[in-house]
Amino acid sequence: MKHPNQSNSIKHFIKKVPALSYVVFCLSLLATPARAQDTMKDANSVVTDARTEILCKSMTQSLEKESRTITILNRKGLEDAAFYCGCDMFRSLQKFSGEIINASGQTVRKIKKSDLQKSEYSSSLTTDDYFYYYECNYPSFPFTVKYEWEMKCNNGLIGYSTFVPQTSFNQGVEKAAYRIELPAGQGCRYRELNTQGKGIEAKESTGPEGQQVIEVTAHQLSPILREPFGPSSAELFPRVYFAPSAFKYDKSEGDLSTWQKYGEWQYQLLDGRDQLTDPFRAKLHELTAHCSTDREKVKAVYNYLAKTTRYVSIQLGIGGLQPIAAADVCRTGFGDCKGLSNYTRAMLKELGIPSTYTVISTTNERLLPDYSSANQMNHVILQVPLPQDTLWLECTNPQLPFGYVHQSIAGHDALLIEPEGGRIHRLPTYPDSLNTQCIVADVTLSPTAEAKISVNEVSRLFQYEDEAGIVYLQPNKQKDRIRADINLSQADILNLQIKECKETAPSITFDYSVNSNQYGHKTGNRLFVPANIFRKGFSVPSVTKRTYPIHINYGYSDTDSIRIRLPEGYAIEGLPKPIDVTSKFGSFHSSVEVKDKEIHIVHRLFMPKGIYAPDEYETFIGFRKLVAGQYGGKIILKKE
Image (cartoon, rainbow, N blue to C red; front, side):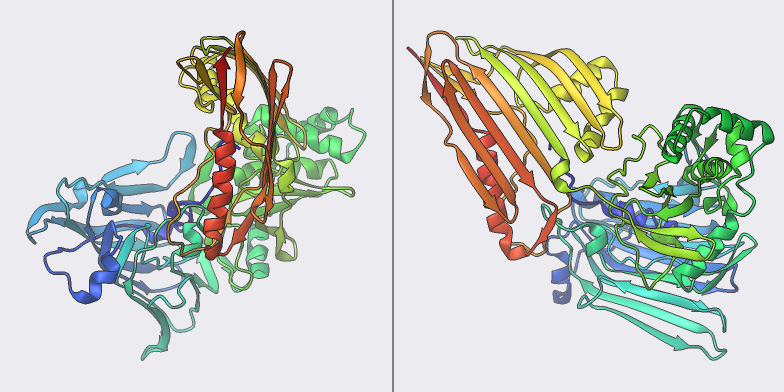
């Protein structure tokens, strides 16, 4: 596997909570009290004070007051000095002020609301979303930046800002506080994640007029360090979710107390949106007249979707959660994940094939089973339960093979939106052993270390998905992509042929040749020849003290069969030793055989998906070193 998937960025789960307005803040480092030492050790930035106060006036209105102060210690922490604030028809930025303070405690710049950049999303989106941002590029470290702002929320509250005191790796926190107040009878639920033993306390109380008050405080949070093959930020960063029980959103009322109730509301949003015109209904039946099974009909509809629609995000008002009508998608030829999935659902309904609108997250594998909230999902797909098989259709990208469950949803929890309400269901995934890449290469060496190489490379399932984007590149960029994965300083890619097999278990095949003027190097009367040039990206992190479990997020199998024809006048002086090793982290086979004037090398690696204890890290690194040593092995040839 050439591009191993290790861990997700914090920005993945931040994007799922647009109300949060993730920002960064500041304070001078002239005096650092002893109690703050732990928050500064290994830190690139330190949040010295962060406060969020939310006053809910009703089920549709609230006022949020925020302040953030953060000290940026070095260039690596500069990203944390940026201000970002997401707005839409429900949320607007009312007030804003900021200032930059140098290491001597002097204010060197005042930041006004007019200094903020306002950005709307790209032309491929139909949305009322926009955001304000400020890029802070003060050149001298350390410095402090402080932001204060107010957000006004109208027309509906389906969720509240999430308390996330740390938003980056290597960020310490001195203190952070969050307070939300709601009128009597307007319930709010909250859920703490990753907070145990971290100096974070949540308490609930009742105000003098019966209002519900929830307060969360955080003190002296040490930086969370990013570790190779470590858990994702979503699994490490402490946070507290807040969600209403009952809600009003763009004149629509719903119940969020359970997933079943939330699903009931989502199902109501689909009501009447599956109607199609009579001419198009007739066209559907013509389109599928040649199909003898329901599966063939579903595939015909999926192929039609790919040819006639494109993705455009629809985020106008409640349209962020409600699909546009199927007839409108049919007429305009565009829609977002909601609209395209609902459109496909409507077409299948006309053909007598039931399907289920399904809400899912592309970033979080698991939904909290006993805590329902709208911000845990960010995508919609379609489930088609056929008698012999259940299909999962990615309607947003019907260029994906029919019936293929891609990496961003495979094995994830999803919420099926059924007439009876919402029901959590886990999507299938593929056995690690089927995510394969097989490379067969013939290398013909010259006495001057030049080489001509012919290559056949076949990637399947998840490894297919990692490589399939190449088909959309220009020919010269395709060659650049192939060349980047080959461990040769000089390589010309010639005669590249690409064959894509878009079946349920998809594959992509590359056939190409390589000319290289320097395959290894020559020293005196010896040639030092690489055993395997195709595993350039196999990394071996350094062994350091390990805090978190080892996460292998992607299971796969790689097999390389390489035949090297010896140059005239040279004999073999040294070969890599063959090995066979099996451990809990995987298995690796390496064989080297000499047949006449040819060297035959086979490398076979299997790395299963898994989670392992921190104290096994040294053994894990030892396994990777062994594999990397074989991939990087050298063959020594001596001139006769």
